[in-house]
Amino acid sequence: MTEELLNEDIRVLTDALPAWMWSDASIAPTPELFEVAAAVLGMAAWLDRHDDRPAHARQGLRVLKLAEETGETVAAWIGATGQNPRKGITARAIDVARELADVTFSALTALVSVGGDAAEALTDALMSWGWIVAGEDAGFVSADEVNEWLLRVTRDAGEVCAAFLLDPGPDRDQRLIDHLNDVVVDACNGIAQLGFDPNEVLSGTARVVAGRVLSHPTGPHTS
Image 1: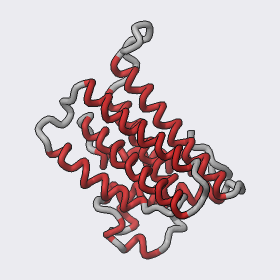
Image 2: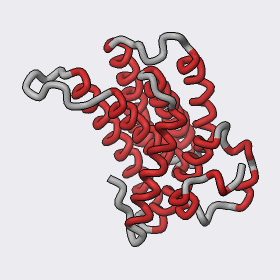
Image 3: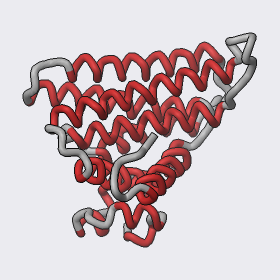
């Protein structure tokens, strides 16, 4: 695994990462997920440089960002189903998959902020979604099945919020890490269930986020 594998924007964004990361192939199981893990670490560091609030306040905002992205995913799915007869169909399956990638990225950014390991979470997710991508029924799921996956992600995000409200300490941080890992796994599984390769969708999101960061170097602007 070398630095040359990364998109240029992400390579610049992650310039301050430790040298060992560029030579350790075990940091993530695929080149795309290495790119995502590197971008997450770069994003978290960039946010920290431009935010002088106490660590607990920064973490709280990142948990709220996860809640925001979860709501946007649900909104995209409702638009894809045409549930609202006044609006009709306003989104596609790929839009839902990209929103799930945003959920994943937000969860990973919050995860590293409380001492979690983004690459480890992505590895767990890959092991989970592999059987979905390899299955004959990938991409041919019912609306009820998508509903179930999105309800799981929404539940996971709610549990992250509940864990954050506990008194700060090692127990709270470990609960946060566990629930954020669940968000990553279930969101990636949702992308796979919709018939898309999470490697590709997540990598695309990492590049978009890196471009936004580099276009606003003086302060955070990720919405």
